[in-house]
Structure formats: C-alpha cells, structure tokens
Length: 373
Image (cartoon, rainbow, N blue to C red; front, side):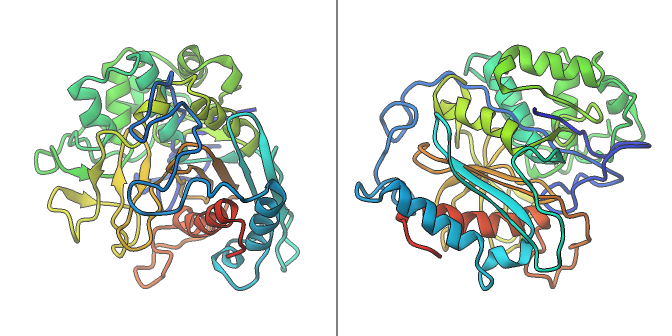
C-alpha cells in the first residue's frame, strides 16, 4: 500500500523532513513516483539491461559472475555491520530487487531494543514523494517535457519560499497559504531545493482544485493503479506521501521494466546542485563535500570522488529509494527518524536522508560486487 503524506501537515500531520527535505516550516513531505514508458537508455539496451560499467566510471552494473546467493550474503552483512555507515541508522528495513521482484531484504534491529521496521511499515517518505511527482509529469507528457516543466522539476523556477500545506487544503489553497506563492527573482534560473517549485507547477497544470484524495487519484491515473494505493497527508507534491517499502518498490519495479516513461527520463536535464562548486546553485540539502546533480524529481549520485551514478530521492526522515546507474537494480532503506540533524558540524548535515544514502550506497556496492562493505 502506497501512502502519501504531504509533510508540512497542519494539525495531525507528519512533521516535515529535516534533511533532504528542507522545504522549511512545519511538517513538510516529499513526493516522487516515476512515469516512464521505456525506450533505449543512453547506455543502450532495453529497460533493466545488465549494462557494463557506469559512464562515470563508478560501479560495474554486472561483472557476469556474481551469484544471487553471494549478492544477498554481501548485502546482508553490510546492512548488519556494526562498524560502517549502516550502524548509525539502525533500526531500518532494506531491500534490493530487479524489475520483477524483491531479491534480498532484511529488518535490521537496534541495539537499543527499538522496534524493527518491515517492508509493510507505513512511513512518511517526505522527499521520496518528489520522484513520484516527477514521474507523473513525465508520464502525462508522454516523455516530452516542456521547457517550463524542466525548469520547475529541476528546482530553478524561483518559487523558493514554500513552508507547508494544511491537511484540509487543496493544491491551490496551499499555494496561496502564507508565503508559498512568493517568487524570488534572485533565485530564478538557479537550483534552489524546496517544495515550492512542484506545488506551483501542480497548480499551473490542472491539479490546483484537488485535495489529498483527488490528488492521489490524479497521480495514479497516470502512473497506474498497480503502483498504489497512494495516500497524501496534505496536498504537497514534494513531500506529502505516506508509504511503505512494499508499495514504493512497485513504483521502482515499474520504472525498471520500462512501463513508465521515467525509465528514459532518469538522469536527464540534470543540473549541478552544490553552491560551493556550482555558480548556478543556491542551496542543497546535502553536505557541501558532495557534488551531485538533480534531474526530473530525483538526484543523480555522481559526485566525482565517491559517486556511482545511481538515481535516488531520499527523504528527510530517512526513507531512501534508489535505482542503480545501469537501471538493473533498485533498492530501498525504510525508517523514520525525527531527531534534529541540522548541525553544520555533523557529518550527516544532509539530514537523515543523507545518512540513509551513505548506508544504501554501501549496500548497493555490496550487492553489485558480491562483497561485503
């Protein structure tokens, strides 16, 4: 069951993501389902093709000799390690799969006795909602995005003052709420991460009159009921979904199969995001030591030092979905952490989403190579 919680919820809502969802204000959630119908990718081959080595020189998509048993063992050992980046985010649930099914998974407990997560645990996914909205627009346009779509979906529209929506509002009412509709000329054309871009885009493109239920129905009308159910806690496209690993995986598998147009759109129209290295960037929710690009509602993890080219959409509470650079594998880390990590001296200054990304990257590498990390 895919539940969408639009964070930045008013009373009774879910608090907003604190890291990879810095939309500001009270609870603000993310959104992100894919919508692509396939077609050859730039690296050639059909959806889910095994591919070779990622174009950026990162991880090999398949070395041709790693057994499924070796992949599962390596990923499990990595996830359960007490000494790597995964140790700091316990408890959590992880899974890895392909276009057909889940192939490996596990519920990693906490040494503090905290309850474990499972694939069916419902969680506010915050910015993972962005990937869903990006996929919706790509599907709606049948893969042919307009220049305006690209500007809004790569966060360069100048609508940077977004705070939150109320659970009872429509999309239009949310846009008009507080300062959500303020346009910043200084940010126009520059990458500035936040929820206002998608909210304004939705309002301008036929979703304005819709409340939570109507919004979910409209998104699924494009992506297909087989990636649902979809639930919004508030009508916020960039962070309002509540879902589970089980449900979100349906969306990722449908992308990998080429049945959503997002398959061909992965990594396209990508813009630089690090203000420390990119004059076209104003702000990003990841540490300044990392230089990723941002595509249509999702990140491209192509940092020149340790990036592997994966596509992802981490949420501030720690929900982290990804697809590897060769479009063969998908993975998810599912958890919810609402503690504050907005300390610039913290190595996880990107928030709980970035902390999950650090662990997820290790699991991804272990899975591809068949060697624990």
